Image (cartoon, rainbow, N blue to C red):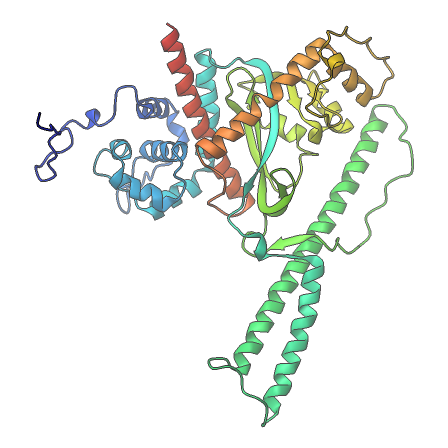
Length: 458
């Protein structure tokens, strides 16, 4: 029997269907993205109402373009531009013949931080309106390190900067002396003494700037600690309690720690422990608050703090309170702090379930046995004692077990499935902007899956 093959014809015109709506399957996520963005309020978008200059690309189209490309692992503006020619779904988003270039994509992304934030909140409101997200529930908090758009090899420590300045000054003096010696050995071809002096002087200038910024950061941190202590004691006085201990003194001018870092490429990023903590990367600390039932991200932001010690309340505050009110907050031991827990739970705030010490994964036989709830701690117990008792109750154990199986898989999807491991933009503000866009894209994809699952059940 003769082999039968499908006919392949690259020369006949109209290879694609004449109706652009036939380019994407009816159950494709792109239809959901377009419909969802159409529901966003009009005042979220920026328009050039003057009508001057070139005609502008529709902002809704640009937002769908960014969300779809981010949700499919394309973060570079040049990759997005290329997709408007090569990806059928992206061409459908752009109406078939619109091709915003990489500069247009980059500018739209850079100038629309407020749009991404409002879209993030409105998508959560959509989820609430369709019963995919409860207005009151349990959330998990965690952070993950995302590489900055900079190398750790572009960083210098405070101690190293000082050493390099002295070394370079010495070399400049040597080069000047060499220029005065008529019979001195020549430099390699292409190198001149004046150029080498200028190069070293420029490096000295940059290193001095790095030292100055590290010193300013150190002074600001010390001042912030002092102001916090003052505010705490003042609050105690207002509540009728006499503060214990000596009054805090204004910080003295001291040198920063030798290991404090400055990165020349992205000064606002920091060297942080990454992965299991056995290596360091130039990174930002991306925070996410995840609903334990829907797995939607309900709060997010980026910080350059290398750990999560002071991030519990900023994470809770990142949740749009007009949309969602967390009843319980789950966090690992990195978030625990007496003041942080008390602040979070004050004024009818959520109940915090936060580990106070690291525990191994192994469970003994006694751990497997059903244990009665411990007796409630005395009223005068410390915050740590109350938290320890809370985590030992059946409700506490059940809730805390949800933490690992909610927020950590979300980070896994963002890093492994979507492929977002490095920021494309530099600076803390722009890192926040891009992380909002990543979380918005993740939520859109997750909400589409939730709707799809419900439809299959019906």
